[in-house]
Image 1: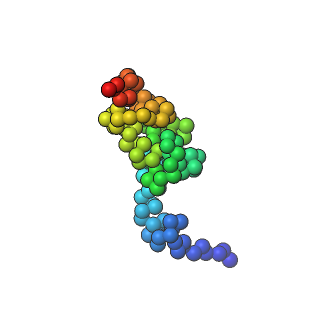
Image 2: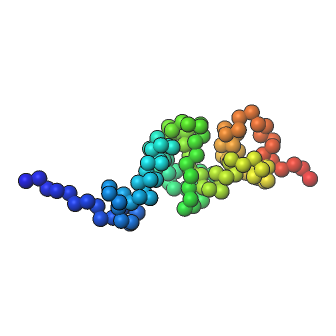
Image 3: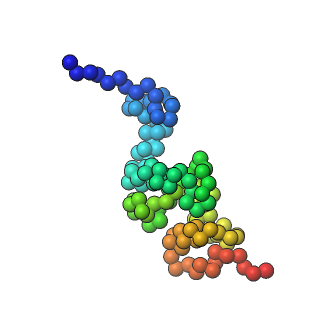
Length: 124
C-alpha cells in the first residue's frame, strides 16, 4: 500500500499555504523570480550570503541586480541593498559623494559611454 503525503501545513515562511505548499506571497515571489531572474534569484542571494556586495550590509530588502540587462546567468547577477540599488540607478545620487569602487563598476556597466568623472562631486 502506497503512503499518502499530507499536504504541508505551513509555508517555509511560516504562513498558511494556499493550494500548494507555499503561501500566496511566496508563490508569487517564486514565480516572479523565475520570470525576472530565470529562477536564479535565491541562488544569487545564497552565493552572496544575503549581504549587499557593495556596502556589505545584511539588509532585509535585498535586490538582485542584472549586471547585463536581460542576462540571467548567475555570474551576471549580484546582490545589492535597496539603498545601493537606488544609487546605482540614479545619476543624481552618483554625483552626491564618494562611492565604493564596486558600485562605480556596476554604475559604469549600467551607463555605458557616460564619463566616469560625472560620478564625483565637483571641486569647491
